[in-house]
Image (tube, rainbow, N blue to C red):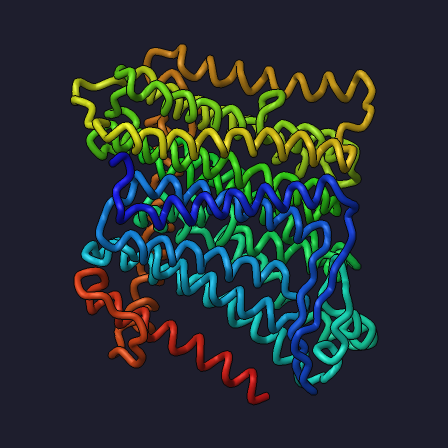
Length: 569
């Protein structure tokens, strides 16, 4: 038999999700863009309703197609007895994300918000025998708990005001119409609510000061990293910023701090990616940089460009993570690209997909981010913001060229003599390569069709195109120059590699930052997560160990407690 019996559940689930996404595409592109709004439960203080507008339809296709390909990829990557439980966790991850996106009230969004955090904790700590994986799951929970607190604050204010949940209106952009009108005369209260919304965006989208958990989440399996970084966990903050912007955009006093913070996130995470030698962490840092790119675009006032980049980014980021997982498998589980084997013919597909994902990340013509980045760059050049924002934005684009080119260079030319172990069955190769091929086709399809539908390719003059071509050529030239030098001492502008800079200012800054973050994380995590188990509703012998269950029980019980308390209000 070509397929083993125990893996049929993965094939069926992945095929069903991909088929469902194709049906959604047919309904979306062949029919008119009609909006739907559903009220299925209505109580005096609650309104459980769904909205299905253009944004939600596109996200449904986006999320289901990525999840389906990841499940197919897991068919090869996660061969273990508990694979059915793992695939069910991925499916619930998708369900909670769709609840967050399609919920038309804050309470419905909060259920999806907390569910995404719960499933991320379970999936990051899947290998519970590894202490690093369990600790990374705890770290992700702790950082996102800050955003959960501010989100719960917004819900409590809604319930106390008794205005928003009683009026579930089909709003396309913002979730609360009565709240805006009632708070126009409340200066202090309005400011506090806006600050709470800002912290929700910052924490959930892993901006500066709240992004250490993003690289630690790489302790989870590669399919988890692909789903978490493409269409679920980190995208929740971006989608919430799309919903909240009509309220935040009323004044620049609240959007400007987010713009500066997103610029800092873009530049610093890109610089950090240049100094890492772990393939998965480099891709994770690129996710943080691209999240800053999305928040920057949205806070500048262009929601369409931000949403387009979020969708296209999800496809090529899942492609990068899954192809990197295959490269790690083919190199005896080495995650350092300097030790990877790229000479075998069996790895040619892997190298091709890694290269395609990297050029999509950079934004080369007709690949991935090209459909959004060049339009955003031209649009930002006409914006009214100062020169500092423009310089930081361009620097982040150039740094993207650098760390993407560096990753491909290290994999292609730093070969080792380790034997390749990519000796899987023929059906396993087909399962992995077909999922990557589907992602590549979806990336091109979405980028081209969405940009054509929203008319992103607007006419520009010759000077604007010259500016874009200059940025493109400068990035390529800087990348080529980086690998023409013989030693790193000649590469003085290479952040993290120059010995003078690294032993000087940057060493002391990095040492102090590491000490402060490590002490804060360890003390707070030990305080909140070293308690006895309270609730056990999921137990599988040999799968999850007691330390993991202790943390999971505390988190799940607190999640249920918050839901019950909000219901009692």
